[in-house]
Length: 350
Image (spheres, rainbow, N blue to C red):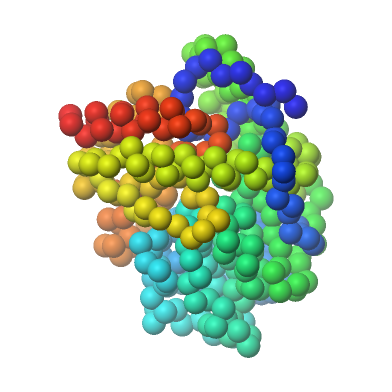
């Protein structure tokens, strides 16, 4: 696969195609079931196990949570990426209930789930979408684990479900999801856009395809990962990409020393971890949005994990309103991180 030679500078946004996939690879767990979306893994498990109650952390992707409310009685327990572990007194799961635990940003240490989920207390499902090969994912003893691969890999869709305990998995879906082909076309057009130095008409086309593809994917029922997604990562996940992501995060954090408008949500992580990005907590919602827009105008596109559009605790609303994730993935160099840091410092003085 020939890589795109990038002539237009930008950071963040969805992945482009084609890209080179460097060796060595980290092999995928086996056996496993491959889905179009991470949410499909949980939906398939609910259909298989029929839990009475589905427990989710209160700090979670609310769009996904809303989609699961028709599957089971959805309840929340208190958890937060700033904590070492959930507030266990808020989790009242009964035998047979399903509990989703999140490895926030791929940097969480062992949070005490193993001793609480043993002996059939409840079905534990770990979400490793922010790093499918974090130390927590590799050493997992959960009943089930899943990862939405398009969060860290250049695929138009794709998610994987496995059982660290070797439990029976749902059947493999056969048909891919509607919208996958549009996302793939968008990735190819974005690759051309980056290589050609940035044609605004081309950008409008790939953005339109991204949005339409995402809307179709969001409406789809449980489906398989597309052939394009499976083929792109058939050998596994490239280990050099995880190393680059961690190195970039360290470099950016070092360059952000003295930043006036925000502080890192975390500055260290377990050995072997590769954080999804550098997560900043701004002093207010207004400052976060102002800095985010300034970065966007400079070509730095930063996601929010996660926008909160539902009733929630004051803690969750406050965190959602002030947090911003700065991409540090394998597409970027140390020089790119220094440029991003310079933009953040400059935005903080306005």
